[in-house]
Length: 177
Image (cartoon, rainbow, N blue to C red; front, side):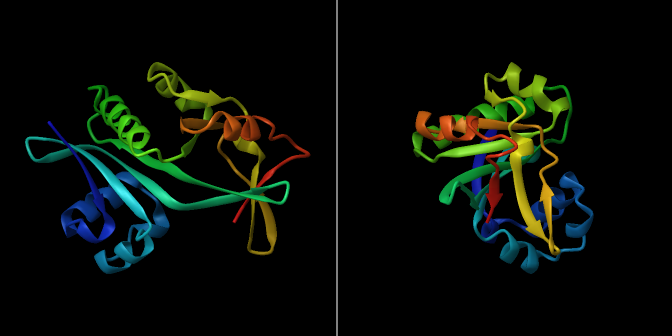
């Protein structure tokens, strides 16, 4: 079993193709390798391999920031965690290796999840700010769009920032920048 971290520029065409197919995001499926590498240049990819085949993958987005009460907050964002072989523990194994790595590197990291994914993160001892994900909004195509994620995941974050995220509500939203 091998755990590795790669920048987008270091991914092979086959790895990029596998990542895009695993994520199943319609708008990204047609990205060529060059476009992918540019789009995700401020990300790193965490890969878990067995016998030279990727069994689980995730992305850490270093271009994630939002504003709360006129203050800017920058976090790394865990996104796109996928296990290619279900119910074998590969997603949990990768998540635990990522958490350890991010803590060792002292990288403040959060993530988001929908209600149906809560049990997975609870089983993996990830702190969850239940119901706080819905209070993140962004301005897109001339309208405000609220997040469709339910929860905020605390991967590696200071108590001070956890308390700020915990304070989110209908009157105190985080605005994606």
